[in-house]
Length: 375
Image (cartoon, rainbow, N blue to C red; front, side, top):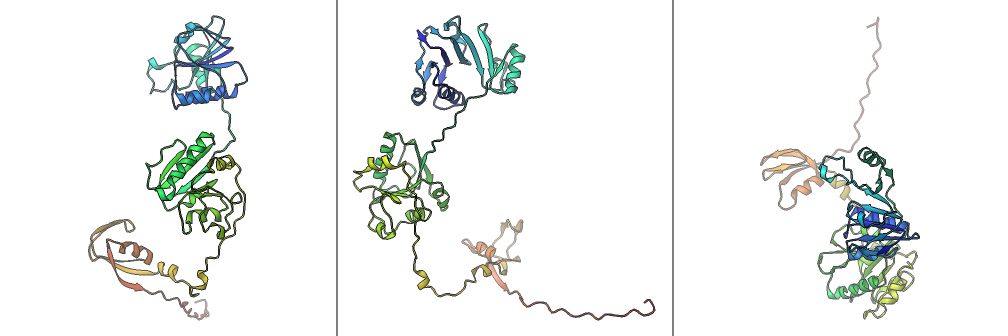
């Protein structure tokens, strides 16, 4: 026998799904009540998170003694519920939609006390179908615990510290740290962990750095990592190995970084400190190239806007002209557009650079003609 004041029944609780979320949110919100979940099959990960808040039973036709039973779809359990219990059938889908055939409509049973709709619209439709219904919106509790976001942009090779990364990931998982690790790399199949998201390497890494809590690079050696520098310039702390050059940049363990030993002997220490995110203002480096380059203003932007005449050297479809261009056809376009057309394989050749006359047009004064005799 299963005995609890309040019972929630769902026939199969799978790894993912809306009704699974409903059951989880329901027990999380009402965990202080005498409540339990009953199911015929439960995904192991769903079982773990549900058991944080209430007991979970794998039902094997036991008698269920309770005061309130909330069931989802499968009504076969009703005959095993104590006769004094109030039984509520929750309907989670719009059964009035033509995508659902008549046999998919909610099932009735004389022992059902009421039918619960999750919106007013659905509640009204249940009332039309069964003559009774009540509204209960989906329970939802908002967790304010945001995950730690770790970002790496690196090849997943031995000398780039992939083994250290895996040790850190395992330590984070073992300590149940709430984190997500985004790894931008071309080695997409090297790490397979539930909290690690592999992303094809890309040029716009700054978008990912801007959401990072930490940037991590655990290499054997680096001359000067752009990824780490970009993080520090954004005042994002780094997790890294004791690279020889870090001190001269102003990197200090516990101040703007957590430094992992090459042998990972302090990995647990880093995991224990990781929720204490360092706050700092990093002093940017003077790169020194202002002492090398001659101070001559660039004309590049002006050149890009310059007009040129081009001639097609092959026949092709031009998206700017919105037509099929024939060989030998000429037209005027910008230098920037011409450069794109000159890329391999070249589609055009430049036949003339059009110089703009920047001199102001001279205005010719007009003579004022006096009217005579109204003419």
